[in-house]
Image 1 (spheres, one colour):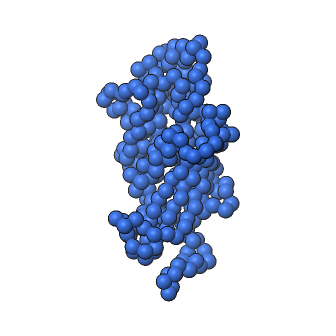
Image 2: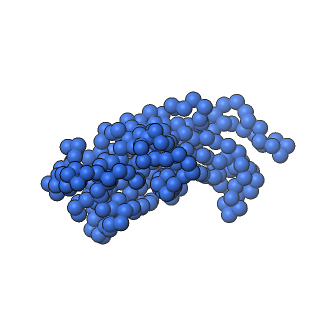
Image 3: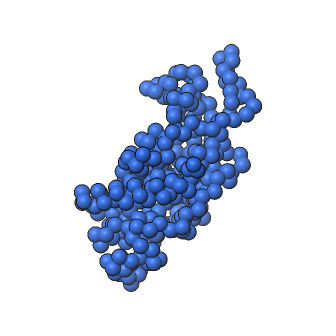
Length: 265
């Protein structure tokens, strides 16, 4: 994410600390900030969640509508993810159409959900080739202090688990809404874990200040069975094969910890 350049003194201090295995906020290199998850926070949405990851705060709302399927998958529902970087969240966010940062954020969240097959899309088919449920996931960034990807992906999963689909019947060529709801058919729980590379070291859940000096970023999305379902690399730097393998191993552990915040057994 684009943000103001930190002072050279602060940049040097961050780099020095990381070289010593320490961080600006005194966390370990693989420690997340405190995460808080609330669900059902938007009354008129079919599902919603708010996630606070340190000072980063993200709100996600889910809406369900009836529409037409894509021609190549006539028996499946439709998923669409949008992200809005509200100007109130950061002085670097500007009003207007989505920029490359909001587009990337939406795509990474979408990819984790889609590639893990988190939603049973076939169960969202009403009439094959004609009517299906469309799931709209809207991500709103309320405060930006680093690592929007993990906060947004976690909030999206929490919101989907909170989502209710209205009962219906198909009669005389029309979808008629009936009383009552049922849960959205969820079958996987993808969790995104993001790494920043600074001074050849990997650290999870980068702060805003760490994002401003990182050489590269890597997001690893892990399914509930610990398989990797998506990777997203950002920044101009690179990751070695060994660093990617190390990130994958750490991501499996961290994903299991984060998943407990939204999946209640």
